[in-house]
Image (tube, rainbow, N blue to C red; front, top):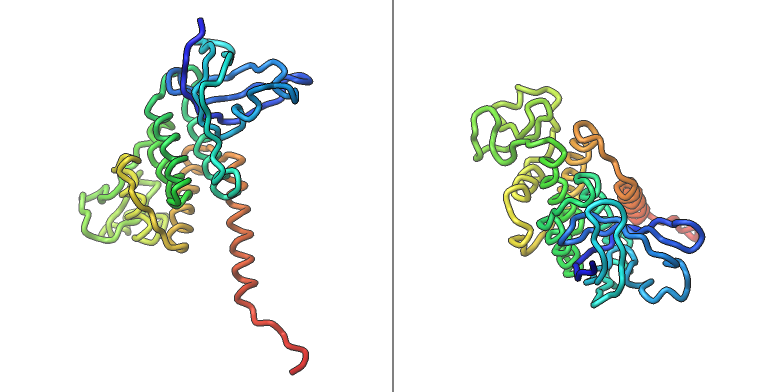
Length: 264
């Protein structure tokens, strides 16, 4: 029976010669795979509405198992900001990929739909996309079976000293107990503080997010190590983000080089 539902398009896959499989994060039914007959045809009327990162209200069938279907589109929004900015696009794709990896299909996860939709809005409004992605990385750790301690020392509970992160002890360590783990992250206390703040807030509360490049690089290093070592999830979108970061650093280094003037 047809129903109206809200969704964010996650990605597309080709199916046969003209058909499409479209994965969506729906508010009502969690992650759903939709079968779209003739979706690759130039005549398909909803082609723009099923592009990745589109936020839309659809009418169709949400099945508890198997494939779901679209009958009509009530309204849709394609973010020009995300489409034109490859970095913002990559981070939002990564966020949706993490949600996809963390939960099974056809399971209501309304909070994550709301947060994903809010992430699009905040990235559109100019908030740092890496910081938003770090928020999701931290908040999704329990879904992957990890619940590290953030913002206080796992040994003594102190919050007033510089903190580092320890994979061995599954949480932050204060300066007095750094000797408890010789393999601790050696992270900048500023980056650990920002990550700890992201862990304790709701995305709705995040009104601004201005981060220095060195802090961002260190935050990314900490979260990448946790996901590589303990979660075991490394998505294609993340690899692309790391490539973009490498290119940006090389371009910055070239910009700092002094030109050679042959006339002198």
